[in-house]
Image (cartoon, rainbow, N blue to C red):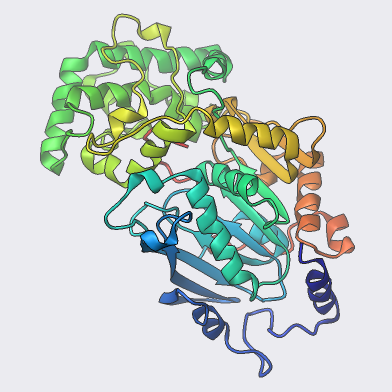
Length: 467
């Protein structure tokens, strides 16, 4: 895996003869980093944004719509490069959704004090082919996008590479490793669901029977029940809100379907984004006014997200959930007799003109590969995050693969939130996979100082049921 070249890069790092400075400024021996990036065939500049200690570029890269048949057309895929030094390790980060065009560091980037490449997932606008052939939105096609970007940039960033991402980004990093296991030197996947058998979701039911305290679970269930009992009054408020904002309900088919989907997401949304301390804020359902109930559901589940306008940005996710990734269906016996539609499948949230057919083998293939072949892979989950109920589990005979759980953490779980022994172990592994000197590995601490602007990356609170 480019071993000889990486030894030379490591030697350069140790004796200080790299061609760029720590701030990314070029020497006379090496062209400016922007020139090098734009010399890559198919790469174009959208903008460069200044940030102290780095160069930050928003770029477009020409990708084939179909990697199996590149002659079928191309599209422009957006990516960003947070450049520090070509001699440093590089972290390949993806959220599995849109890419942020503002500078930010993933946790592994800070740990290794490296460069970061961030990719926008195909079919999330503006990285969508026109016309959109939705059959080309698959985990293999997306992994192949990532592979081509790696190949294009590896000539510039020749040190070790790590793949990372949170939630759907953690899934993406895992799928990339499954299809292109020779590209990366390590994978750090955060809060990545693993829905192996789409129709078997009992793990989620067990999670909701045991998470938090009985008092908190009961309070949330009571709010859900009361909201459905007051469907007429709360739906009138929802309609008034939709009329004022210009929201419509063509995709789900009715305001009533969107209303119920929002209410049924309440407990899930609470545990995904809140903590046990927030249980104190759950209203007493029986004595809460209509407005108090309406406002609380809005704060946790978000009335806008099952509108056409709220769903549209996430059509690619719901399409993938309904064709390959799978989606949870949880039992809610406390709502017996009150629901009309139950937990609604991804098909409900995708426009009907887009055809969908589920591939039952896709996740089984990935799960089987992880169980048998996971190497230099780290999975981090949150104890109180519902998405961790179905998770990746490398098999006994895999090498250098770990699954750690952050106590009390939600969907924002990270290495920093692990218990001390696991935090040190995870940090040391990340540093080692990045090819950094033994002294840094032994220290087992992030190499870059915390930067509030770069590193304060809160979990993006999107109330729709998605990872």
